[in-house]
Length: 151
Image 1 (tube, rainbow, N blue to C red):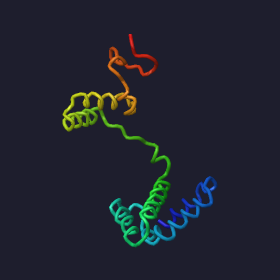
Image 2: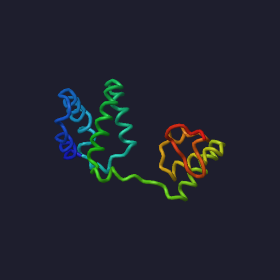
Image 3: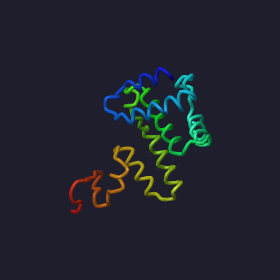
Image 4: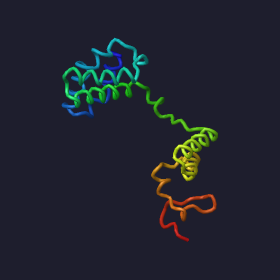
């Protein structure tokens, strides 16, 4: 992990304020390296990170310091993943979308949730776009989200 921290530290530092760099350096040197510096990135689990964050607060540091250390660690871990691996979005298959929609409707007890989840899955619309649609906006299998939806 030490190599990843070094690469991350030298990456994009030109856009950061000196105080931000100083805070990152402090979090890395005081909290992150002692706990995870000897470890491979792939060996760090979310459970360990959560326990580590709680241990920082329990050892006398403020809750804010623990949160800042966690935030710095997650930034470093995110920067360690190559950009091409982050860009791929996973979409469910049609069957998976139907199963998810069915589960949502069963859990909520509302059939409309089934329709909303299926619509989102098939149109890739954002949740806010879908919730904002009124019945007048959907006509003959198509929908419109611009202007007035009245006839």
